[in-house]
Length: 379
Image (cartoon, rainbow, N blue to C red):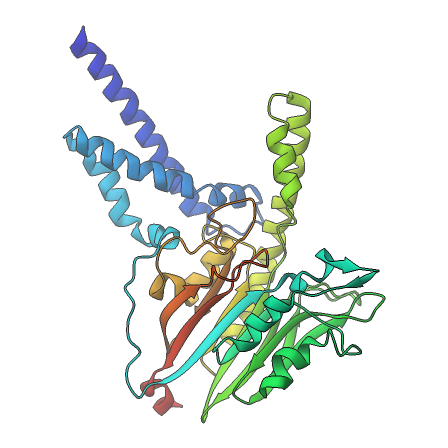
């Protein structure tokens, strides 16, 4: 009887293991499918961390059982290692080669420096600590999304506080969007001269959205690098949306309503970003210079958006980071939605997520790039 039970249990676990593998395969396939053409693919890809983790548990389970079936999850681990690398990076800190030409890039969604979280007498009050942290960071280039500044206010002119005060060059892609004429958008600051800049708008209508890409050509002591500062379509999911969904568990009608609302928001984001990333890649491919593409992508590493970028560019976290690298400072844990990608001609060192700066709903990320001499000679 005991032997029969063991056989049944083993068969059940094997079936579950096979289902996990099939789930993972479906996720890998879904990464190739634009959600703008088939939106359910976005949800399947989004779920990939679950089968990746489950497969690792099956590896441990079969190993402890000393079963030959350990071959199945082990094969998945080896063949799918590139996807595990997206989930967790294992790199040791490397010293930048002596004499190398370097460029340190900081990317940060500043959440308008929390201006609208601290309205006093109808006037937004920015976070001075956040502004000072950014202004004094040792990076060479600063790519700031959801940047906020009031040019007609000495107290709230963040162009001056971060840029002019420290003799930084700037390219701003901002709009005046509120009644007190505050500039909101994306700004690139640089210690090196900015030769040229532009904006990729995702909408052809007169009404511009905050989601866009700003780019700037940076002259790094005679070599040019094109920097793309990205802010793709937001997930539009607030903390209360998650809380409402959790609190609705047990109330079937309410749970369905909140669940559908959450799914609609995710779907809208998947579809929009699938189109936006193609517009971005068209400009990346057209660049005559090595590129760094960084910012708030609002998508996890298991998404069509990330996958399209990863097929053409290297990811700084994967190549030079460590740990989980979570960048979202909110109710949903372990989300890495801020990234830095880079092209041939560059090499990433010392990618860092700055958890010490926790005043925004995103954590800043930075990496140091070495400009390869071979690339410079070819140019």
